[in-house]
Image 1 (cartoon, rainbow, N blue to C red):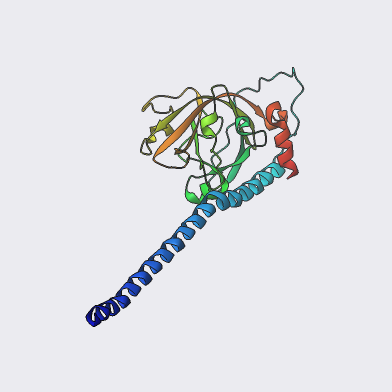
Image 2 (image 1 turned 120 degrees about the vertical axis):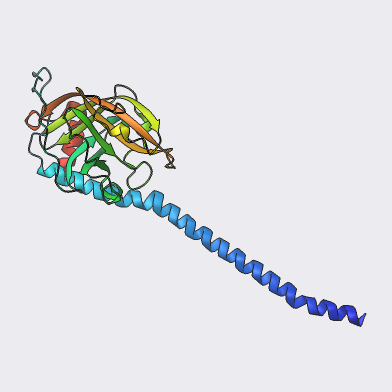
Length: 255
């Protein structure tokens, strides 16, 4: 009997040590879980708030510097403005040179158009132009990239576009109206979507394309979703904005 009590007594410290070890591991797992949760909140919530503020400031600054009327021309005004004016490409990455309006994404949707597609541009200013592609209004492929779920989520609704939707691009020279055609899911390595004629190597462009690229699926990055549009018309800054975006153009100018 005495021997059994001695054995039980000898085992107690070991059992206490084991319980302590489990408790410590449990606390560490809880701490890791809290840190992971905070990171998710920061990534999906705070980066959007921070980027949205920066993008709104950039849009407001562009609108205040823009030279041109803020109201559209009266209905029935002749609308043949000749070949579109194409501005020179910015010489420095990070330069905001336009604003993109996509009514399908909401009546107030307007995002800055910036030169460059590195994290420095996309994480802060939204829609970045691929430097090797065309400028708005030019024959060829004007291609941009944007985040889908973080840092402003500028292309979160890219999958909702339907054929015929209008995409408006405003630069200092005027407004370029593109019409959405179709989208495509590709692997990240498929860079031929940026060719002058998207996906057609060696083809000579005769149309004015706009290509938007983003991650797919919405909360992943295993693929890319590509949205293709073709330019339908353009109008100089002196003609005022297209009626469909006139209210938002005016709102941007007010800051």
